[in-house]
Length: 308
Ligand code: NAD
Image 1 (cartoon, rainbow, N blue to C red):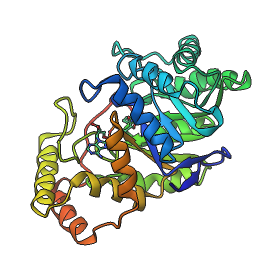
Image 2: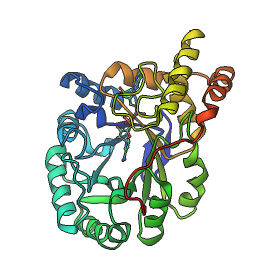
Image 3: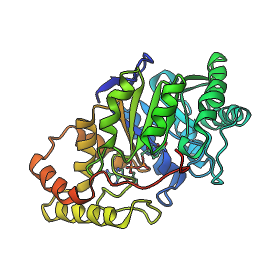
């Protein structure tokens, strides 16, 4: 597994990161032991970046990830979690709440520090308050040694840029924005990296839409996007290929992001993903799938407050 620098932090992260939202049953029920084995399969395969949030499964994902990481050498992985978005669909980016949130996450994750703390889905908050209150509060925790670096996550890229221009952040993470269907994150990459801010690409499988199984029922993409993704999966099947493999391989090897974070709750998925990275990209299939997805290229959906 190749590693890349995480911006100016001095940390290195594996090019493929482990996304723990499926450990909160976001994609349906799973056996806890499979989830724990998935984390161990990732570690054994050289994955060093793990991303979670108290929002996933209303704290359940942090609890399972914490259980899986118990006893693992703390210097062997980079642990990222989030603040501001919680399971009861509530957002709270207030200084007191985010500080308490970090303490609660540390407890669940069984560690005395997280490497990266991210404000979760900032487009649902007041961006000026996030820059002026939330991030300074996290900076205090940094001085106390509870967090090492600070980032922001969300869907609308202008919102991430707005905060990154007004507060010192080390990373930005967006999702479903550099995939076979959507390349908008690539257009913003230099904007962030030019300021020393690392760009993390989450959900290269477009939250399940670019898999052979298809999108979960809650997927927010408009119907035409999901229809074209299903057509792309059928096209791959008709060639004896798997859209999941093409989507993962494409995002990791062409994106050039610090890491690409893919979700998983089963060790077989993790091992498959790692194996796929070593295999060549099928350029002919890629061209045909891109043609199939062309009518919905870069089509997204609204997220957050209208002003953001
Ligand atoms: P994803 O695009 O990574 O897809 C995950 C889905 O694909 C899951 O159902 C998983 O079981 C399935 N999958 C993975 N490997 C597979 C394989 N080999 N074969 C078949 N299916 C496979 O979407 P995601 O998990 O939502 O996103 C990845 C991670 O990025 C999240 O877990 C989370 O850590 C992070 N994320 C953050 C934000 C945010 O901060 N706002 C938003 C989305 C995702």
